[in-house]
Length: 196
Image 1 (cartoon, helix red, strand yellow):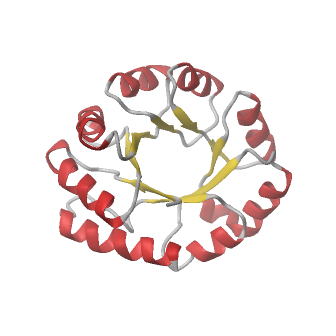
Image 2 (spheres, one colour; image 1 turned 180 degrees about the vertical axis):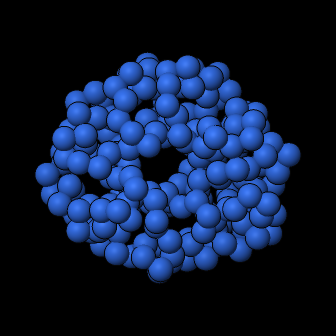
Image 3 (cartoon, one colour; image 1 turned 45 degrees about the vertical axis):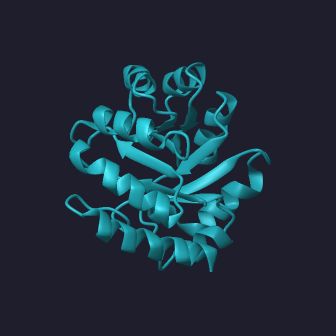
């Protein structure tokens, strides 16, 4: 399932039920942005509860200290909005999957040279599917390109058609305050578009 569920703003008290809802919908990659309330506690809860079934980790990771903290909580995913070579290297040292943000071919190849094999086109809506297709055409075959930022059910097919390997979805799956039933309904609808 090529979807990362981005739970920006989630709180530790609701993360278990929301994580269960995502799992039932078929989503297996869950990101808790570091600018959420108590993100490390939410990551710890998700990792303990779903770590054997899902890849769980953090988004908006901006420092090597963040990487260390996430890994200590059991997180295995490090997602950044930018290309920071120190963050990439530390993530790989910790055995994490690292997904740095890139916009240009230069940033993409710099991240690749540091060992990143998953790259996040961000913000995707600023560049569009044609930009993603152009990047995809020149990137090494073992690179996985994800579109994040402005991706929603109505345009997922265009991104996948442009050659991206996956998408990150935030508010179309979870908005702060959404209960598990709401997340289940929204996540199921997003998954249905991808598998159609």
